[in-house]
Image (cartoon, rainbow, N blue to C red):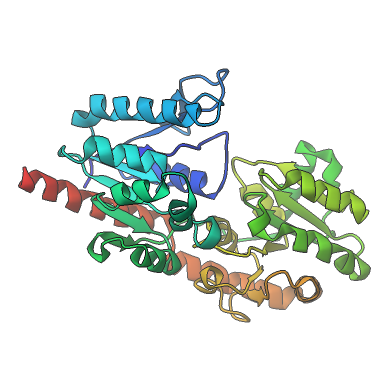
Length: 394
């Protein structure tokens, strides 16, 4: 399977960092490690951004994407179509993130060529691709074209079920769960070093070695349930006055979160430090990980926290239950139940030995089932099968 030439298409990419973007970034790195000729094609959201860069040894091409709504999307789609037509002979597979505009253009431009197009569905429920197709302008037209792709990757069973309910061909839908790199095992020294590194980068954190630290990483979006986490923090502080919470990421709810933090007097206790391209230091420094989402497919952030050996506290929703078995490798609480969340956080801080056992079980689970290397290999097997099928058909 080595020697495949693969273009990963994702309209959002670094320095715009969210779950879908990180999936593509990490998959690209692992594919490269497995001797794949990989490139990323994305949008140029700002004129000041260079057209071509190399990000972690992966060549990145940014296509025009004016900020004017409507015209920006059309301009990007036109540019993507031209790029794919021009470079199709040198590509064995095109892999597209999200069943939206990029997917539509890739399928339309390449469906009569020998280059297979594979789409990756992102998210589930109200914020997922299937719901977007049902509600967006031209969404149903985009769905009808996406259904003509050579294959669709679903990273969770919940997303698989949504695709089938939306009329996608079961023979084309492939369940490939997200994969993450497995970091070194946690240690007191790694925790201390990570805290010193974070404090050096942002002195306002004031992270001494005794302070309990909870971390969330991902989009700052209403569906992530972050207001519940902020609202739970005063109760946590009643038992652990030095406890701190980091909500790491960017998104449309940032202003509302800052207002809630201020209204509860949580400045200096709850922080919104922005986007981190690499969250490994954050996870090493933390004592627990929170994922209070209303909906998830299969959360990359949750997988990364579990791989790092952190005890995780997540909402009791189908996507999270795929990974977390309550009491064995993590804890679950009802959506938006602030009291239950505060109690679980306090229990984890108060019982460090039990918390460590949860983290060890979580790490073992991810190491066995959800490594990045295994995910990349499954993608390559699919890509190679589709390429050969196309060649035989020609």
